[in-house]
Image 1: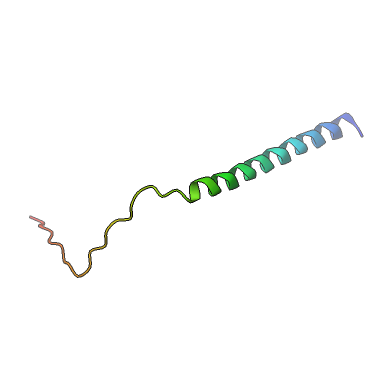
Image 2 (image 1 turned 180 degrees about the vertical axis):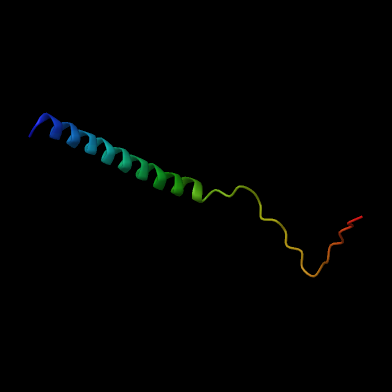
Length: 55
């Protein structure tokens, strides 16, 4: 294996490791923050027409 081939192989290994770490972190964030609710849901208004004065 030439020096160029070794450099390319090392670069590809670094890219693969970086991608794996990023995907692992994204899955962890999805698990942690996916279950957190930011606030209470907004109340629903049923059967009411709200007036809007456009003057």
